[in-house]
Structure formats: C-alpha cells, structure tokens
Image (cartoon, rainbow, N blue to C red; front, side, top):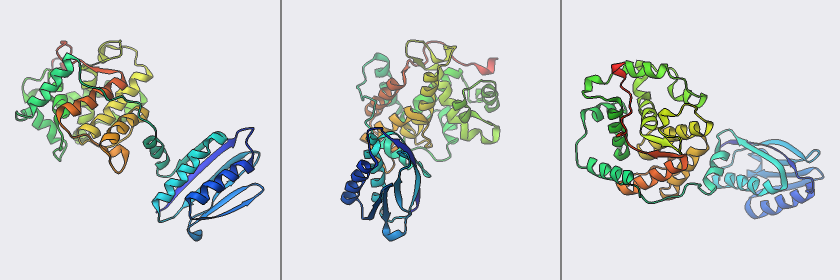
Length: 330
C-alpha cells in the first residue's frame, strides 16, 4: 500500500528543534518499528528496512516542508504516523498535513467529537411524520413512487425517509396524474435558477440523457426549499438573501441525507455533512465513517434525522402550508 504524506509548518517561538526531536524519538520508540537517526537539524525515521521513503523532520529557521511516500504493509502503522502529527500540533504555530488519498482529513474527522446532539421526537409535526413513516410500511408504493425509484436502477434497501421525500415532492409539485410529471419541464426549471458555486455542482449540465442520475438531487432540493424553514427566517424558498450558512446547510442535507438514509451515493460535501456522517458512524459503524448508513425502526431513524436537521438549522414543517411549485401551470 502506497501513500504520500505532505507536511509543512513552523515551530512556536519558545520551542526548540531539539525538544521536538526528543518528543518524536520517544513517540517513535513506543509506536514504530523504524530506524531512528538524528542530526543537528532534525530527525529521520526509516520504515520497513528502506522500502518506504524516510519520514524526516528537518528544520530551517524552525520551518519544515517535506513529504514521505509510505510503502508499508501494516496499515495501522500508517495511521500511527497521523497520530504523531496530531501529537506534534502543540509544538507548532501552524502545521498543515495533506495526503494523496485525503486520508488525513477523514482520520481527523473520524476522531473528533461529533457536534450533533441526538434527541427524541417531540413536536406534533415530528410525531405526525413518524406516523406517516410507520403507515408507509403497511401500504404499497404509489405510481409516482415506483416511477421515481426506477431512476435509481437498483432498488434501495431503505426507503422509509425516501417515501416521505417522494410523497412531499408530489404534493409540492401539485401532480395529480403520473402524466403531469414532465422531465423536460423540471430540467428547464433548474436551468433557469441561479445557484451558488457549491450547488452548481449538483445541477451542472442537466440533460434528458442523464436525468435519472440527477433526479434525486432535484427532488431533494425542491423538498428542502418547500418543506423546511431555516432558523427564524421562514420557509427556505421564501428567503431572498441566501447566506453562506444556509447554502452550506442545504448542500450538507443534499449530500448527507441520501447516503445515510436512502442508500444514495456517497460524496462528503463540507464540514456539516462530516458531522452528520460522524453521528451515523458513532451508532452504526462502517469501515469508513462516511459509509455509515442508518436502517432501523422508523422512530430511531427519525430521531437521527431531526437531530441532524437541528444542527443544520432546518426544521421540517411539511407541505400543508399551501406553497409549492406548479410548473405545469406556468
């Protein structure tokens, strides 16, 4: 297994190179099967009898800028290198680490406390939502739901929240008959919207030939706009000035809810999605924290859902407020 780690930083004024090298020596002797060597400028760690490049900490004016290509067989040892960098942070004014597979970012995310607090269902709307989820388990799919799920190719193993989204979408769009659902009209609607740079990634180059791959994104966006309020600013669709915080919340919901609750594609988008993934992984561990999905009893799933939406500042209010999109009537 080969990974390349890139790192640069500068020591704090009161920290000496010798002090840092002493710390690295102690850490390496306790955690690595590596050859350790030192000189006046830094310290060198050689892994796997030279099969990996040397992990070196050579300082010039208390600054370091280096990389290490690790080719070891013991993956746990690689993550111990990350632990070393984490332990070294207090010695540095700044210390930046990256790698060619973004493992450093994921490792940090996975090992930091989750900011989302899991809570119980309490409001009347949330209780009504739970009843809908439970009732849906007893009734067959509608023609709309069958149509929408056909875009997925493979039928998802969890559709409890998915059915809520689809049913709300039909109501928001005021579809009465399946014939009212028109792919091109929906595409034209999204082509005429002005999105932030982040949301552009979801809806760029929408065409009929790739509609099936983008439909979930489109449906989620409309659902989030017309079935949710944002903080104390009212319905999302009615908010004229889209703040960076609101934009990041919508992006996190669009990228986070499908993989966590609907067997959707995995694509971590921003720090807020990371917190959602961490909450899911805390209770439903997976090999990679961003692969954790929640497939449980309706009440349990809903607890996770409302807790995540609390964190995003989004509150589900349903579709009985009378506002929606009637594109076929424009």
